[in-house]
Image (tube, protein in one colour):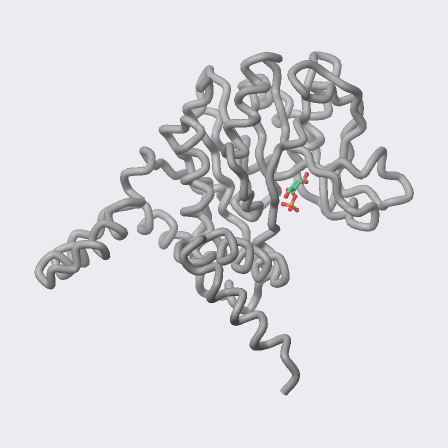
Length: 288
Ligand code: G1P
């Protein structure tokens, strides 16, 4: 694996999930039996990532607590002989080495990523948006890493979306590239369907090279009045930037319906509970 470091922008308000996210970071809402963020950090760890940087804001302290030890709770569980619970409580802190930095102002994804400059240093790194949960055999980030190992240039995860949804994503135009990738020729942040260059959308997994930080510094506010990562990535097109349509199924856990979908998906993909989930669905599909 080439990538050791992953940057997680987690400073946002989670407005699409209000009021649930009024006092709880959306990243800590549970999907099946663990927080959204646990699933995504697990994907990174399985992809070879050993260091994680959370770009946070005030009110997100619980995110850091989750990936830290909790000696008081551990002592209680140990005293009560709750071995299984103890292991579950200890596991998050062992998944990587965790760092954090405050974003300061909430000025968009590009601004959040720019905060990672010093921490990243001089090596390729991943940017991971925890709203996007991917169920796949090979972890999504590992799939991108394979492509990166071949092309040696930045790679973004791509997925075809319904045309009417292009306004929710960064959208690319591309032509076939090496190792099953596509070479990106155009990128637009959240275009209306009429002007979208395709329906191939960027999903929240990126492998970037440190050159992006210079471009981010020169990037002005774009769509939604925010500094967009997509706008800085567009500047890389002449030097080469690639996309990869990953194998797997994605849920947007940052919206109410996508959150429900993620819970159903994880329930249905967990062999020991699948029959029960199916029985629950049947119960509520029956009239009465
Ligand atoms: C961000 C990016 C967008 C990308 C999306 C993937 O948008 O700006 O290019 O397609 O993540 O989830 P956001 O969902 O933060 O508005």
